Image 1 (tube, helix red, strand yellow):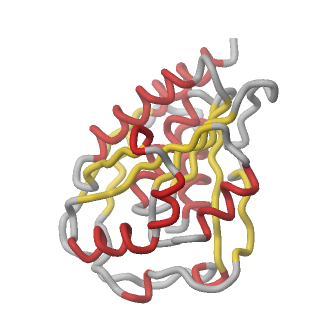
Image 2 (cartoon, one colour):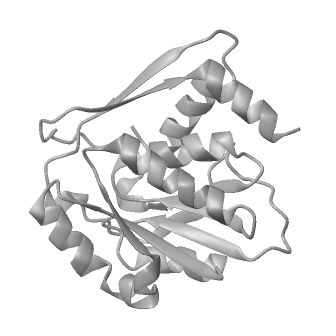
Length: 212
């Protein structure tokens, strides 16, 4: 499932549904494959429809990047956004090949971002990732506009959409796409099934409260 389709699904089930739903999100990381490496020119980098956010433009801009295998293309998005502060969230611990690829392809990004702004998360523990990212967004929200750029594992994209849905006026979610990943491609699952449960009733009540 692409990030755009994941965003549409989150909106349909958690924002637009007229009945209360308990949703279980499940995900299995893909087995490492060189085809996962992003190639080709960037087709677009902009806000995901439905997750644009409408913060005060006078505030400084903070960008939180979910680090993936996109490499220097991530720097292109940051050049467009020109953030006052950049934070990175790197997946780790699931597969050594992924870990090595992340470090190698994002060497320039890590040089750009101060070590105090570099965080990691465990792919196999999406709930802890949600709590960590959510608490940081709450901390930043009183002082800055926030853009989440969820590259890397789709679980980080899900966390970003859930947080942005909760704080729709304070947080926007951006996307990056290269022509090599525009067409969906079958991946071989690595085996472990990860999951997270959400409630549409809770999401609507929080979302409506944030607009008051």
